[in-house]
Image 1 (cartoon, rainbow, N blue to C red):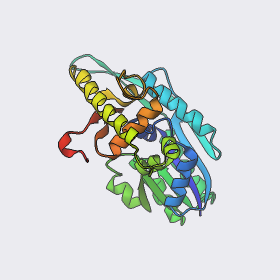
Image 2 (cartoon, rainbow, N blue to C red):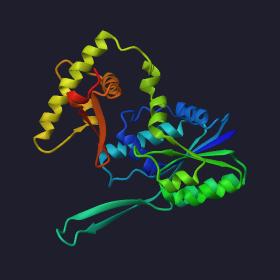
Image 3 (cartoon, one colour):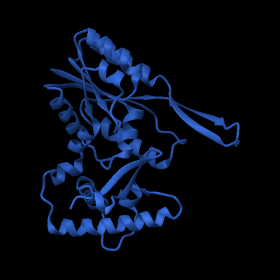
Length: 278
């Protein structure tokens, strides 16, 4: 069966920012994972819908999006659709502080329109939508009346809403796709045995993570994953970001550390000793 992938950019990049695989996703492998998950045989195309990176965004988020788009546009069969972003500033009636929100104009309308029109043109047999937005439900229902199947890949740790799950043929978890398609996982091997040297490194990483939490916790802050992996000055931990990322992934897999989100940013913390796996 021919499979076509559709990415809800704002939702997907938010999920990627929470993931330790950020910036190292092999999109060819992500497509392989999607095809295998839905019993597909051929990738008919992958469409990514996004707002253009703008100066109003945080530098870290702007860099993440720019790198993602550069990688995607070089992947065969992937197409990036950019839309203007509008920033709206709203002053608070109580404190006077101004809040800035950013909205991608026409993005979701274009995504749903393409899903339906390409289905009508018989460009695919199965649509795989990377989104949690219930606004795609009419499009999902429309293509299934044409005899197509619509799978939804949940970009939220809590899964998709009941209404979206009912409308779709079935659902998948983005976390599983990212685990399969991570370039770090490809290079290291997700089933590779941990060596004694790895265990020594991981123990030092736990100590440094505890030290970082104590340092930033004094000001009610948190340990940003990007900062800890790229900039934190440790005593006996790897200097290269790739080695640190591999160690953190091992710790997360072993239940000794946790990756979570704070205001859309990926953060790290060690897990208490009473819930870790020895």
